[in-house]
Image (cartoon, rainbow, N blue to C red; front, top):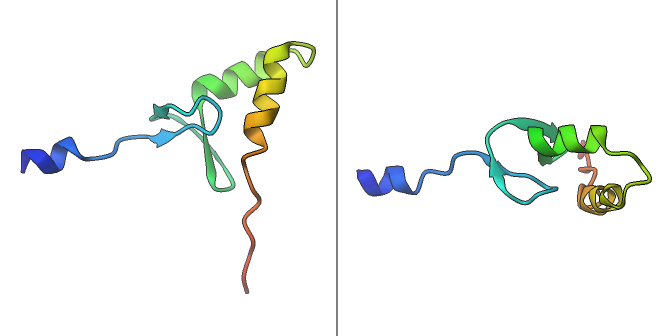
Length: 67
């Protein structure tokens, strides 16, 4: 039983920092942790870090809707 608990996955992988976090938001099929969300919002567009965020966000794809 303890081996089942040890393998239990808690949290999700953030599309930006690629770390497993518990709190955040979902954008389409991807997860953005609260830390990255706050950094992204407060980073000026002239900051080189902003280009990194854009590069990571390009990984997010718009899911197709099948009817």
